[in-house]
Length: 165
Image 1 (cartoon, helix red, strand yellow):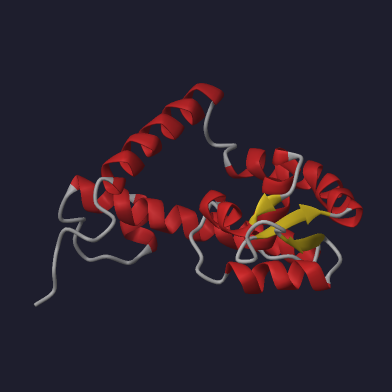
Image 2 (cartoon, one colour):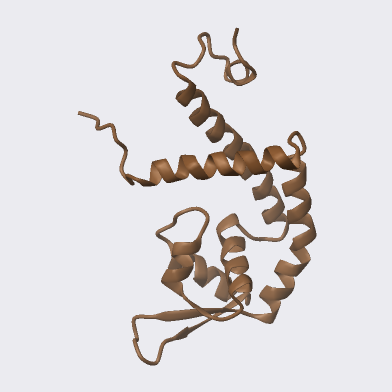
């Protein structure tokens, strides 16, 4: 019997393995969540990575080196400089060169950046709840733990274990 995801994807056969069903399901769920968050962030004239930078800086409470911000992002990006440039142009962050090492740039949240993130807090939390409304709090905790274990397994090798020849 085909599951709901198979029906949504109009698959003629079921998934080849439980692992394939999990990965495709996670990708499909991520796509759905990203779409909804993208709509929310666009209403505040931001992208998800820009919002992520702002919340990292708010959470830290002090300027951070730009490369440390890149390491803390939810989604990996190589284009951190361009991301910060847009936030600087928008007046949401400031950037200052380190006096000890000219290769290092510190980024700090401006008052306008703090105010914007604070205005977004309720909407972001509401969306988190809306997206998880089909799960109990206990199930959310279980799912978070399972995803953590999956990430730990995937992180053991940053490159795919299968090579295309």
